Image 1 (cartoon, rainbow, N blue to C red):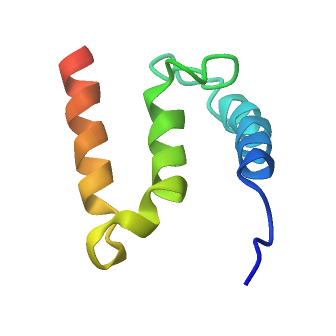
Image 2: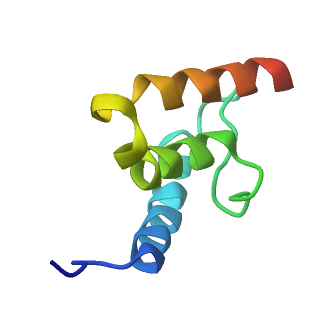
Amino acid sequence: MGRVITQAQITETFERMAAKVDGQNAGDPLYKNMAGNFDTSMAYQAACDLVFKGKEQPSGYTEPLLHAWRLKVKAAA
């Protein structure tokens, strides 16, 4: 079975949506923008991991990825 969409299409959509999410959180002084910071935004990278690495997770559970990203965020604080 062929791919329905490409990784590039997913990434482009994530980047567009990051800007929308940033706008929704504009009033939160603790929020860190994702748009324009894709290489450094842990939230953006975590979201991408859930999509692109989700299939590799045991039984499809997202918790190992989310837990790993929570630890990275805490370590960076």
